[in-house]
Picture (tube, helix red, strand yellow):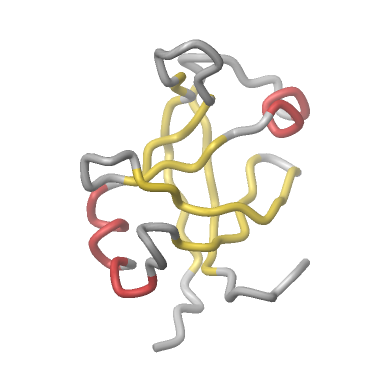
Length: 100
């Protein structure tokens, strides 16, 4: 099944509470459900964009049935993002081996 759909979500920059926890944006449950068949061990490869920054990443499982996209330092700094900030995240499915 080909998924050419581009998703756009509005979320909030959050931080996992443990030491060294990742910054992330939560993925809505309906997207997790829609893409469940594409998950490989719970992970769905995507190409994500925040502002002018595009990178290859994955929807990662949180362990509670939901997913998130990690926001690395480069992405956060390039877009002036911090915990609690509103963020618009756009992503599409990336097939393994597909690069930018």
